Image (tube, rainbow, N blue to C red; front, side, top):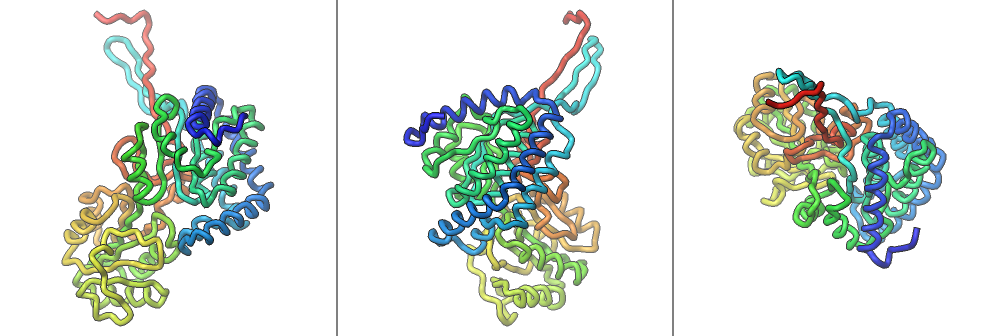
Amino acid sequence: MKDLTDNIPALMADIGQRAKAAAQELAFASPDAKRAALEAAADAIRARRDEIVAANARDMEHARDKGLSAALLDRLMLDAARVQGIVDGVRAVAAQTDPVGQIITEWDMESGLHISRVRTPIGVIGVIYESRPNVTADAGALCLKSGNAVILRGGSESFHSSAVLVECLKDGLRAAGLPDDAVQRVPTRDRAAVQELLTMTDTVDVIVPRGGRTLVDLVQREARVPVFAHLEGICHIYIDAAADPEKALKITLNAKTRRTGICGAAECLLIHRDVVDTIGQGVIKALLNAKVEVRVDETLAGIEGTVPAGPDDWGREFLDMIIAARVVDDIDGAIAHIRTFGSNHTDAIVTEDNAAALRFFTRLDSAILMHNASTQFADGGEFGMGAEIGIATGKLHARGPVGAEQLTSFKYLVRGDGTVRP
């Protein structure tokens, strides 16, 4: 292919046209062919793991020079274990039931028509994401499984890692006799390429942004192509009056400290007033002992080691060993706080009161609501999807983890027998 990186509009137009042609062919590829492509891609990633780790070392050096935070460096870093995790994720997607062609529902009409609603690929999906190279493999695998072509534009810091991963996915496509243009990567760090991708209505069917508020706001503001919004993860843990102390401690520590740089990490702790001096004190002290900076409201200010919360600490995605904590009068106070400061991503209640859990589930509209479980489970792999392309926080088409099934649309197949309308 001719090098068009000095002409961004021409580069992106070429990528889009090739993706559209590949999508038209991939749409009717057999389940066996797509599975074979993914298995071959997983084999290629495993075989080239040293090359991937070496490319990632170049990316890490670039990211350190840019001054990325420890949490963002953790997102970017690949080692042998994480590469194996990518391999396992691709294999898990390969093993799933192919969603394309599935009959969602069907019925007969008195007119004699038989109508079925059937899953079909969306077409060409543009994925714009920050520096998490695993997203390259996850998005590529899920789009392939669902019969979609994908155009990947990762963060500049993951430039080299993503390049090798895309080549592995292409290896898999070629091995299965499928068009390797079905997975393409924007081969430039130039941000003008993003602007072009957002306006390619002739060749791109949907954009999936995966990143923080700045990225998502940019995409939603400037895209002419429809968008699956993946907003920041301002996740809450609410410790109810009827919480089990041990569960509250385990869940809160895991939700905050397991991995601070992922969108499912807890960023705000809400404590029922009745358990402030018991469970609340214990959980906050455990967070402090785990080296978490706890920013608290006036009620909790007397706990040694905490720091006062500022007005900007509510509704903030820290992505770091920091959590905001405040006291609420009751479950309705917790619900009101989450409605005001949440991002409709993932929120959890810790309680042994099933009525309270039901109230929490019914009155909040986050994409994922949890009862007695860590918010770190907000992940497509943990939902049995093998991987995810993101957590959609919008209300149209897809919500929560977006896996292969969520990357399909549908069409109606109508069958008659010489049937005419009177």
